[in-house]
Amino acid sequence: MYLQEMYDAEMFVAAKLLRLDNVKNRKQIANIKDKLEKQELLSGVELSDKQRQAVYSVSKNNVCVITGGPRNR
Image (cartoon, rainbow, N blue to C red):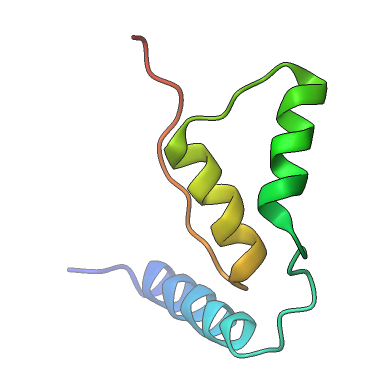
């Protein structure tokens, strides 16, 4: 069973995501690897490989779904 309101909301979000994914990417960052390395050095914060891949993905793609959060090590 599905509430009609939830179905409608999900369909609305799905349609918006499809539209976003189909437009020209105007935010892709040239030389992102070099710029990210420089920012890591300046800030003293080193990203994990997964975090770095997320940043590259955000630059490259119009739509990204990033899940998860910091975990205790």
